[in-house]
Length: 478
Ligand code: FAD
Ligand code: NAI
Image (cartoon, rainbow, N blue to C red; front, side, top):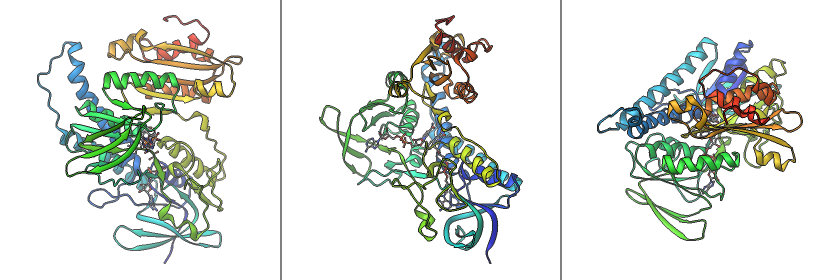
């Protein structure tokens, strides 16, 4: 017998689980089918983000930062520690506890909001009048037929494979393996100086690995503002100690019994050979659509394999929606969640709006990197006249007290209207500071608005205040 729902979400990551909760809040009889299992084969909701992405990576970044600070910075405070020891197994167990708390939290929220949860792989079977028949192959081996008036696809993404290289998560690792290395490797190679490469490279470098990053593009962090990328590269190489090679071409990769040999050509065209104890491959991610049986209902994909949707996340099929990493736009958890809320509300006849120009980016390295809106390069290319205000954390008292007086805040505002067009931060707690800029931009604030708002003293947020003042050349501490 087919089970019938108003809304069925396929995928229980930050896009899918949030969409399911919101749909249920709006009065729809809602189900979510999610395939992810924990090591015991039990359902583990939360998708890539909670299981093998955002949350575990931040847990390891925190542990490794604590270790690094104890080794290199506690002395500045007059604290001596004796010989430091790193218990990697304990660090990984802590990470796992955090994952379990979070994924269990989603199961609790599903119960609280009366979302029916299916643990298995969901796919289209047929169209039945205005509804869709789905098939869920459940983890216990049974198959469930489910009918849905609305389908929200939130199947996320998986690691992009490097041709000719097998990820075994023993010697050659994707994000899952990089988050679970059982002992600090002496030599760690990372292919791709993107967000995962830099975050994971930082974790293992801080714990003592020699980390070599091999990046194909000649530029570093091409999506970031150039000045921020330059400053970040300086800190990541000089302070964190990552060796970052840009403009490389990866050649043959040979996996031995205990190590991996990578042949590569450097930017000058010289052949190089590096031997690593572990190699992380982080060269981007591809949308998960292969298990959906999209052809059964004529669901259209783009040339890049994403589900083809409009700005409202509607696919080519009536009442079939798609959100998060499986569609266009940045692969970020908060973007996925916001799309999930918006789709549930659209199904309910509401008219939510997402400002795609106002999605914050954060890279959790040390120092952190965060931005929202346009870069200087984008404004120049678009011929927009702008003014710029900048403030260094080295002149911020709180940053100095934290021992984090590096980096800066840069604000870009329209030369004529003074409307804020972009804010770029490299420095302490950039991930938190960027929220003020996001709110300001959402409300079309001017740099003058931020300049006239009282900011607590001493606080890192004063750097944003000063950057706003500097837009009109009236900075008080610079
Ligand atoms: P996912 O989280 O990928 O969830 C999709 C779910 O669908 C999975 O559980 C999958 O098993 C399931 N699924 C797939 N196909 C089927 C099917 N046919 N049937 C049933 N279930 C299916 N983003 C940030 O914003 N901040 C960060 O700090 C951050 N850190 C990251 C760190 C790492 C190491 C990685 C890899 C990613 C990180 N991201 C971060 C990106 C973030 O994880 C993704 O953007 C986000 O998880 C996308 O959410 P989603 O719901 O679209 O998909
Ligand atoms: P990415 O797109 O950030 O970086 C991939 C890098 O690999 C690029 O710099 C690219 O030029 C390089 N590359 C591609 N092919 C290559 C090759 N053959 N040889 C060498 N270099 C090559 O992708 P990444 O790091 O895999 O992360 C995937 C996504 O996950 C990110 O784009 C981001 O959306 C999300 N993420 C977000 C985080 C955050 O918000 N803090 C943290 C981690 C991931």
